[in-house]
Image (cartoon, rainbow, N blue to C red; front, top):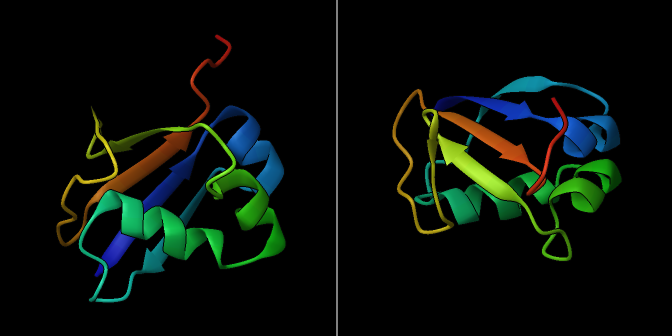
Length: 85
């Protein structure tokens, strides 16, 4: 499923890019599973998205929890609980 992933604030700085267009594996069904999969992509992704980090997440511009379902062509966003203006 083609998915746009957006990273904000310190997550963006740690990973080194603001967004990625990725084909997520079909077996990923939730936002939490997508986060776990993304965290395995590189050491930078692991540092930014791993379970040790408190993050807010959104799916299609709506704040969502780890259990939120994924849909084809969705846009995911990850950011720290507090971001600057």
